[in-house]
Image (tube, rainbow, N blue to C red; front, side, top):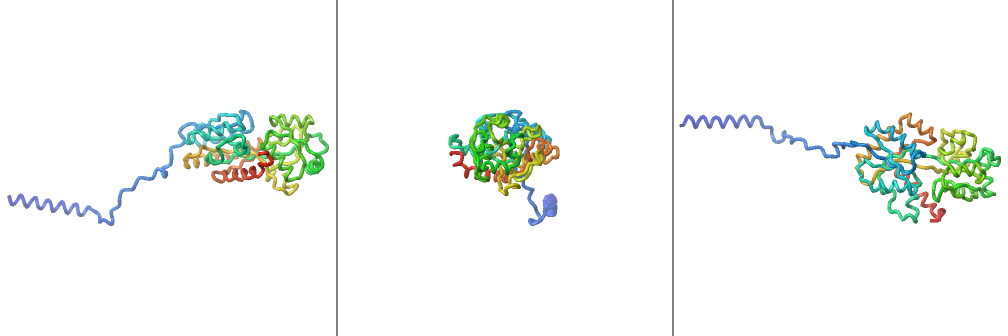
Length: 338
């Protein structure tokens, strides 16, 4: 019995020594690594097609540019990008749809400004949405406004001729609605260059161009995308562009600043937004992917061929760009009759 008890005691002591030798001192013991927080793991996005809403008709300049971008960005995101047209309300039928969509990154908006901003600044719309109703992915292109006249109009061979004439005689100009880019361009010519101007309303740029060619208006205020074709066909003379720099598509046309030293910039901004509340990681993935697509030489060339300038400004910097435009439009509200 005593022998058995002695054997048990020895076994217990040996086991204790083994355990003691294998254990590390408390200060050397490290806890198992904690699970990484969800945000550091990344997100499984995208896993299905992404829908981008174009608020203007298929085949137009906005739609064409978006479809080119969508195709060029698919390889960066690894999923199809589907363009869907939802027109009406000066663009706000589509933008309102996106503002109310699930913020999951699968429904985006291709916006055009100043339409986006004037669509809620106009008090008659009673629209609650504004710039804070979206998350900002990236600016795509800037489409500059120009001043053009009929090719056989001998009164105006330069922008100086036109402005000098307009200081003495009322210029008849087209407009496509209050506070649109055409109307804003005309108002800036009045306020910044001292011209006299009377606006005649038209339903679209093609109607306004037809009126110019028929001699019913003195000038045509149109985007580069709208004047480059008629210019190359010898129908019109483009006297100036309302952008900081010349445009490659019409490289012989001077800027207003070159001629008069006036910082008069009027252009249409196009870019991508997401519904408010979209995960910042999703916004980051989208902005990086679209930026890569926009910086491809072939994409830049396609946009240049359309007459627009690629200008990939991301996130908050894109929102700041629109905030500056909003401020300018607020300062002009009285000129719009609001």
